[in-house]
Image (cartoon, rainbow, N blue to C red; front, side, top):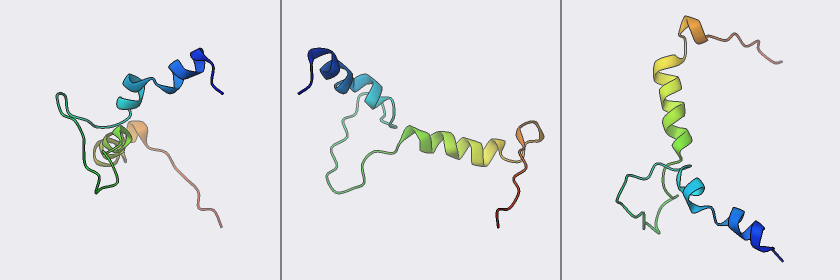
Length: 65
């Protein structure tokens, strides 16, 4: 059973909401999808389109065989 302090952590809705792309003043109610887009997808898109290959942030990875 959860104690009151654990319940506060479990129900931190603002923190949970910040993990997803949810436009302000909109409620996401789509029961026929995989859910709202995670905020990480926006960050990954930025990295893939704008930063990958930038000489300042380029990393070399060796192939694993």
